[in-house]
Length: 514
Image 1 (cartoon, rainbow, N blue to C red):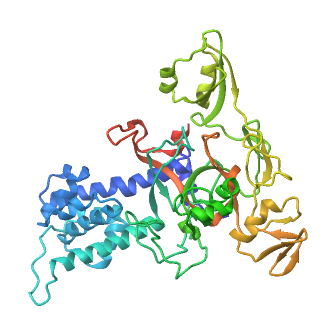
Image 2 (cartoon, rainbow, N blue to C red):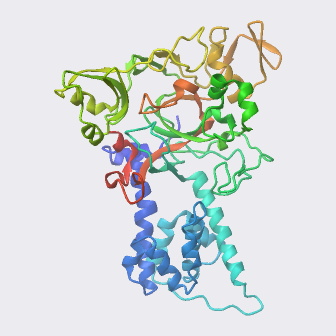
């Protein structure tokens, strides 16, 4: 078992869990310490220290002190590219402290918590505008800005790839633990950062070019799966960002949807005749976010809508949701404003009864309303679910399994009855030349009766259990698809930025689930 740095911190502060400690370390290293150092640097530059504490104002102040034009300030607000110009502003300010070498820029971007404190508190570090260089060797202004931006691109790419990345909740599958328009930081260090499969790519763009469309990467160079050391492994109930496994093939017009599901419902020939079909490497598949309820070797089952792990009920989170049929008595009406205020969604009505999407902590409250006669789970026992073999697996959304999560090194016997569970693992995820003939199985032309897994796999489910396309519909998540751990929400709003959810800002994902 790998040594965990956070386990040592837990000894120091046993009341904190690993997620809280990750946030504490992040806040200290990336927010508090750099701001303290920047505060002292501002004072040395003759700027009021408080301006270092306020975003936007600090950028304007740094450019003003460095006697630079303000076009870089306004370019910060360009989507995707804005981060690069923000880094460029810091680099220009650092040049006024004589820090213009490559390694000095790298220190400022990668470890600002240490470097800013060093410059701010070291008495020998002085603020002084760079002296004009000799005319023969002086760089053109455009060259200076280009050098700064190139470095900013490299630094931002390194941070995004190996340390931490921003992520936005796009759908309601994790409600009410996570809400649409929650902006998260995802820790790549929690499980160890992956080396990119496709290193030739446009920086700071995932898989599609903004505005113009088209691929943002090239597959001329392709590296195999390798993950560097991290703080730990994926654990049960972690909220995990991962690449969508079924996105190896995608519909260009609907890139985030399940190509295979569309083929089953509409027919492959129709899909190929009416849409553009593309393929994607692992690291360029769409990012999904779900809760891991099953780790390698676990047995997972859903009985009447209740998830069980290793024959025990899975942890229930108060704000997670399920769908219920709510019947009323003689009055027949529930106050819709009351439902809205308590985050209860009206899905539809059936013969006078309400079908409601209800947070777990509101179920008993609904039962006690005088106008309510009964509250029952809205079950779908049969559904088009993984492994999409209705002959051998008569499962549905709310009555699913049992299914055992594959574990690296474990061997399973293959039969015509269970091959649907493992076919995609053997062929797609683990890259074998796999064939089936006359109810027999072959790898590289040799008959096999069993298979040993090369990777660990995980089982992901949304907290909004009846409004989530998750592992019940597309199966296992391979370890090489794991991106990182959702750490904390740094911004959250409703319909617009003018309607902030103040109570969610800078809260850990763990605390928002409770």
